[in-house]
Length: 191
Image 1: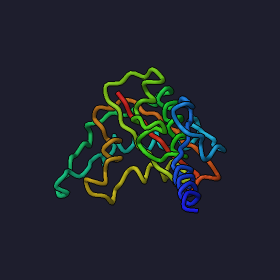
Image 2: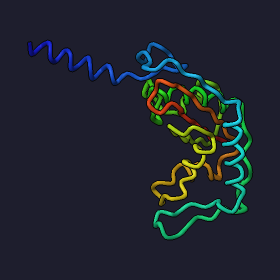
Image 3: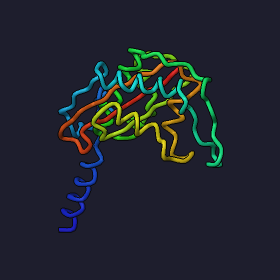
Image 4: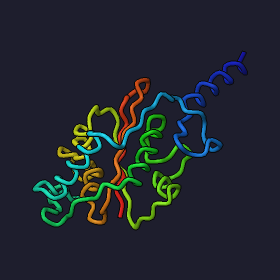
């Protein structure tokens, strides 16, 4: 009886530990939990995030809190607009699909989120990733990443979008009606 209990417990724990493979090597990860996934990187939600990010970078709100949470790094007038990069959008699409089953900055096979860039042959000298889940529009995903109401430790997404080293951006989202958050967003910034 005890052996059956532990076998059932192991099956339960390992069953829920599996993550989706997306477009990575099927041999290095388990079968995806959710498969009914639609991915998009060419619609008005992507354009909205792109436009809002560039307005943010070049507008009057281009600042973030410093570690002391009482002073700010002001970047107003210091940043240029980003270029929407098709290859980075494809990388973001792969990552968005992976996020449905494994919402983390690591890939389903346990590697860094940035290995998707290596797999697609995208060279870069700097890279950053923002992810979000649950927002039903590009505008609401951008607002979540903007982190207006956070202090320094909570403004990692904001600092990414205001990164002085970044010159291009890729954006995509995945929709899966069966998954807990339904919408999964990915932004990849690079130089």
